[in-house]
Length: 407
Image (tube, rainbow, N blue to C red; front, side, top):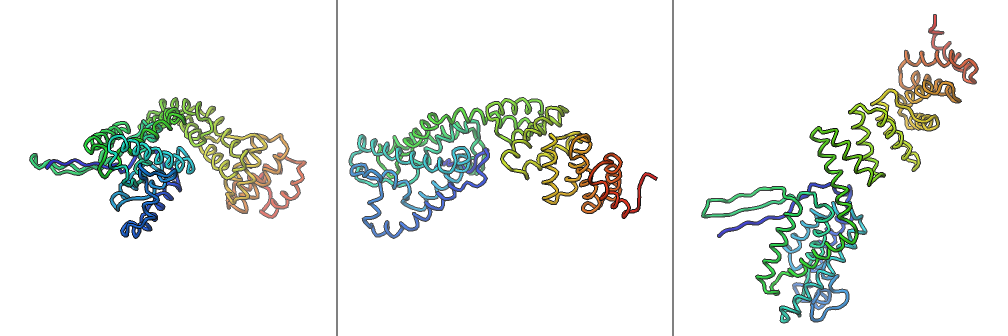
C-alpha cells in the first residue's frame, strides 16, 4: 500500500496579537459539537432542522450547517485549518470581518454543494450537509490572495513499503503550491465520488471560489502586494542588506504612511547607515504623531530611543518641555533630567530655560543621585540666569550643599 498524507500546521506571516474571533470560533465550534452529540446519537429531529438538505433547504440552514459537525475527526480537521489560517486573516480583516467572511463563504459554499448534488446526484439531495469546511475553504481563498507571498508549513507522512520508505516531517511550500495541491485533491476526490459520498467536496470548492471572489472585490490582492514589500524589507534587514531594506521600507511607507512601527524601523536603519538628519526628522514626526493622539508614553519611548542614538536629537521647544515633564511625572528621572538639560542647551535664550536647568539640577541631586552632575547643573543655572525667579532657591540649595564650585 502506498500512502502520502499532509496537513497544514502553520504559516510564516504575522498573526493578530490576540486573534479573539479565531479563538471564539474554535471554542464555539467545539462547544456546539459537544452539545449536539446527544441529538445526533438519538436522531433527534432538532439536529436535522439545523442541517442543510438541498432538496428541502430553508433560508438559514446553509449557514447553521456550518457550525455542526458529524464527528470528532471532522471537527478536528476543520479546527486545525482555522487555527492555522484564522489569526493571520483576522489581522488583515479584523474580528468582525473574519466572522462575516467565514459565514458568507460557508453559506455560499453549501449552496454550491446543493446545486451540484441536485444536478449530478439527486438521489442524495435529501441527505444532510454539515461542517465548516466550506467556510474554511473560503478563508483559504482569502489567504491565497492576501498572503500570496507567504509560505505554508506542511506536516507530511510518506509510506512506500516497496521502496522501504516510511518517513514523516515538515516542510514549507509557497502558498500557491499548498492551495493548488489542496484544490487538485478536492477535484480528484469529487470526481471519484460522482458528486455523492460522505464529503461535501462541492462545498469545499464553492467556498474556495467565494473566498477568491471576495478577496478580489475587497482589494485584498493589492494589500497583499503592499505587504509583500514589507516582508521583503524585513528579510533584507535580517540578512544585513540595509540599503535594500531602507529602499523597500520607503516604498512601503508611500502606500501605508501611518504604519508607525515601520517608520520606527526605517528611522533605526537610517541611523545605522549614518543618515542622522533624516532619521531625526522621522523620530520627531513619530513623537508628534503619538502626542497628537495623547500617547505620551509612546512619545517618550521614541524620544528615549532617538536620544540614545544621537546626543544632538532635540524636539521643538514645546514638545521638548512636555516630554521632560512627562518623564519626570512617570518617575523616569534620569531621562527627565537629560530632556531638561537638552532644552537648556539648545534653547538657552528661550522662556523656561532657567526652569529647565533648575529642574534638571534638582532631579540629579535628589532623585538620580548624581551629585557631581547635579552640582554642575545647579552652578550653571545660577550663573547663566541671574534674573531667574528660581535664583534665590537655587543659591540656598547651593549653600546647603557646600557652597560654590567655582572656587
